[in-house]
Length: 212
Image 1: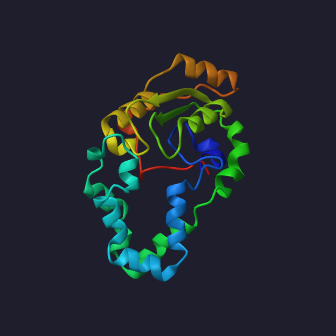
Image 2: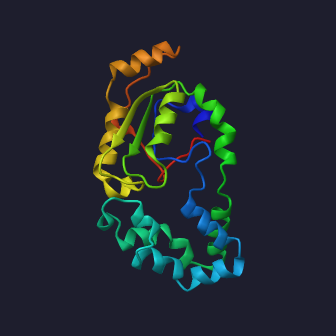
Image 3: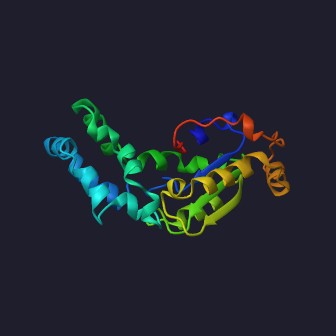
């Protein structure tokens, strides 16, 4: 979205996101192998096998994605997997979502990252076992508008679930506060200084947005 709608951006925040050719990660590739066998995927979802593995066993990918497993309760996992408890049509849509995972989408826009001159903050969990901080560092080096690259200690891939208050505070600070370094970088990139966005006027929809 960002690289194709630059004129609609004021500022941009990226955190532990899919980029370049880092998708699908090995855990997702395993699920994709299951999803390629329609009857097996339907059965595993319908009887609750996938949710049982994620909620009750040490093989849970969700809990591997946090430093403190207690920070990812059963209710949160159940919400991520809610389509599996729905109709056959809902499970089929979920299967289609998994099978659509490909790096071709992010690689198609990788070259456009150098056009992103809007002030950008990149936040990355220090202990992300799925998408390491190296990817965040690469983004910070290739996006001209990147003015901050912050590594969040004691957090894993799902750190918005693990540290929701800190997640919100960091983003609110970046969006609301005038930043001298940010303005300097914006001017260097040939952009006009951007207006300060008041926190109370911000509206967010959904859990995340992609680069494409």
